[in-house]
Length: 517
Image 1: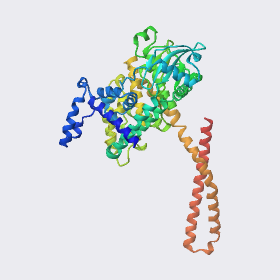
Image 2 (image 1 turned 180 degrees about the vertical axis):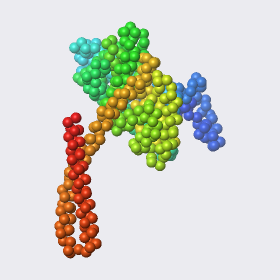
Image 3 (image 1 turned 135 degrees about the vertical axis):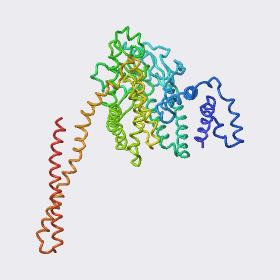
Image 4 (image 1 turned 45 degrees about the vertical axis):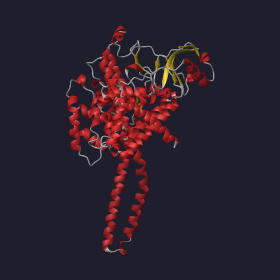
């Protein structure tokens, strides 16, 4: 009862903001109910007329900012769901600024001392009181460790966990109501969207997980001289405090500073394309928020990411699907793209492959016939998600964050050099990856997994053959029909044994080749 009352109170606050920014109109809901409709008409005075000339997506941005940290983060997640709110509105949400007023330095001192059981002066020889950034979940200060190392210290906002817990419960409640009373929304899986959002927020509210993500990314690129992940200082890191190496460089969209550093934009785009490819396809673990504010170009030309709160993962089957799909679109092989979706089970078999191939062509041709520098595979994926309703295709959540990341990566690449397309650079790498990883290893690995089953079946087959031979020796005790049946069974057993023996030999040879390579 208390939970329901809390949800209702939060819901009323939410409705007030949605009406104020003209996100929803009660008049439209109750137009068939005259009395309630007249009451709904009275709510028009709540609207903030300053936003009347803004489009719906822009008004939604301001609404989420007014609703606070939880909804700012939810808006950033919703920016990946063009299939729900439309492409233009999703694009508007990508501009959602994650900037809030900072909390006081007294709270900073209190949090640090409670996390490490000592005063801030015992850990840092210098600590800047003014934060360099204040976001919805945490704020960042520059500091210097007692050993002289310059660092950046990220600190969670006070009571942020309680705030997110309250708002996420409301979002779950609303998503469940949608699925229950509006079955058409089940295809969009609103509850799963909130589950993914909730899981990502829980990770972001434990800064040790962000430190772990940075550490894993650093390990993946330990031998890459073009990619610099800041060092994590674990002795100064806890659930609410993250301390990393201070990165000094310029944003990738600062052309003037890049010119001063004598760095060629085209070479930076090539590095970025290779780094993005390796994260997505080689490792299946990628930075999910690589906007220009989270990337720095160092004096020596290395690319250094920061803020590892949003990371994405793709399993091998999804990476293979994605690689085949992108190559299919780039080569305009729409029929293979369509069959790929059916084979992966993303579209049910009662749909038409030919019609889906035609739909793929309808979204591929307008994009792929543009000059190479203007081709956007992120927009192509966005268009693909928009036709999912027509073919009852379930949205794959793991691809939504990637689509948003691709959109940002393309934007950063064009800011560096508008004449270069990162997919032109990445396409041969994707092909080489397919040949190296998909063709020789995955099938052989699958075959080697089946080898023990074949070996285990051999004794039983041989035993059956022995029994059949013994029965054949007693042919005088059987009728002509039974003898003929037994003979047929014996021949079948012999054929089975030959097939199993032959398959086992082939599998052993393939398995040996796989192990050696």
